[in-house]
Image (cartoon, rainbow, N blue to C red; front, top):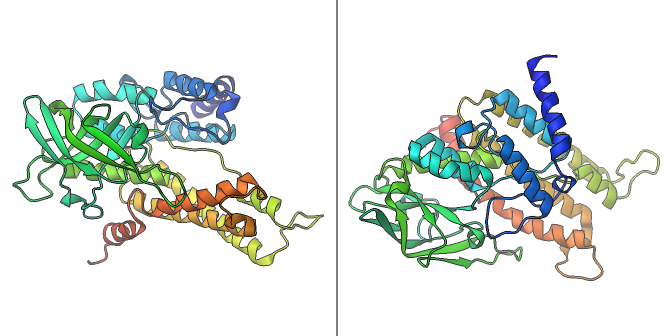
Length: 395
């Protein structure tokens, strides 16, 4: 047996013994928040995987990882998928700010923050966009003023995902208003459990409120919790965005690949649409053709994901992440549209005693996932990055 085969066999045996049945298939994936109670099996799964270093498989062992190489990492992902196991931990801690600290942080910052992230001890939020600084992020106005060994922070952020359950937030703030706008920005870590941080939910068309407005009124942060040099947060913040986009694209090898099992689309179609009694073939030609085209594009996307992971020399692929992220989000939205079409009139209801709950749930999912081509960088921004950085087209 080769070393790779032995590694796979060891993982397979360990997962079979240590992955609870309640952590397989659709369900809760922890993101570290102390304010969200986890089902027992999800808690056990998180603890078991953290003990192995597999919540952040490629991180150094000193910071809670397992130091897996890209081949071992792919094997772990394949074995998790084989038993339909959910990811043990996802979120902006292990996938966004954690890798950024690994790359730009001091030894003290790494030792202070990373082991807790690997254990899922604290949920992280992202403080980038502001009411007057969305796509033009460098125009942000949230200020951080140094006073002794602290920074005093005032301003507000918008579209702060999951802030109502967040324990910490990493935020871009203006630390020097006298220089060019790109040059006076720093990335700082802030504890959200303090009087100076207020969270206001924003209601969406889906009826849910994962997004929030976050206000800082004389909030405080430690001066030694600025990641990277002071006033060079633009460079650090852009790198973090690559980790974010790589995570959305499923090609971030630093942290964990968030995965929750989905019912295969052909199975959904077979349940909702008339089929041939003998062959099981979907009778409607147009819907059958639409499903087939989507399956081909989805398979091509999955192969591109794998190639990007295998070729990655850094913890986050560079501008490839924009192309894969954009394609993946468009495919998810197309999947929702196909599912909605298969539901027929049942997919148009909001509340009804006569319509299956699964159909009502999908209507909300369909609406919520319209945000996918906004979150993590809009589709327009991704296309600009691809045009300029990948294809080399002129402005």
